[in-house]
Length: 109
Length: 123
Image 1 (cartoon, each protein chain N blue to C red):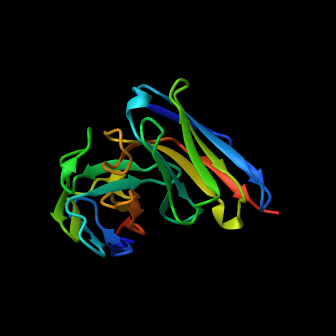
Image 2 (image 1 turned 45 degrees about the vertical axis):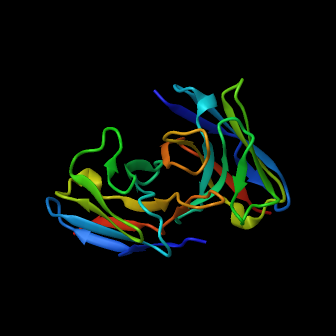
C-alpha cells in the first residue's frame, strides 16, 4: 500500500508570510496528488489536484508542485482564513483507493 | 449548486448495523463516481469505500472489507453505505464525497464533500 507522509505535523507562521507544506509518497504516484484544507467543524475543501492545478475558486496564493514521490503546497502570503489543517491525498492505486496523509496543522505564530 | 446531504448516523452497539444515505443534487449524479470517507474524532481522513457511476464497480478499504457495502440508486440520486458488524473503532464522522470527474472510481480526486453524519459505536 502507498503511504503518504506529511511534514511538519504543525507549522507556525505569521500572517503575511509564506508557508511551505510537504507530502511524500512511499512509491511513485506520478502527479496524482490532491491537497485539501479543513477548518474545525467543516468538511474538507479541495485546493489542488494533479499536483499543481488549482480547483475552482481557489486563490492564486495557493500553489502546488512536485511529481513522483515529493510534493509541496505553498501558500504565498498567509491570510487569517488560511490557518487550518491541510491534507494531501493520492489517487494512483490499483485496485483504486484513496490514501490521505496524516495532516499538517497550520497555526498562527 | 452541488449539495450532498448525509443521514442515518447515530448511536449503535458493537456488532450492530446502520445504513447511511447521501442525497445528491445540483449535478448529474449518474455520471460521477462517489465515495465515503470517515474521520474519527480528532484524527485525520480515512477513505472507506468507492463506487463507479453505474454502480457496477465497488471498492473498500481493508479496515471495512466484508462488513461495509457501498451502493447507489441513480434513479433517486442517492448513495448508500450499509455498515454491519460495527466496531468501536468505526466511530467517526462519515462524509459522502463526489469525484471531480470521471465515471470510474479512483482516477480523480474528490471535489465536493457533504457535511457528514456522526456514527458512534458504543455499549
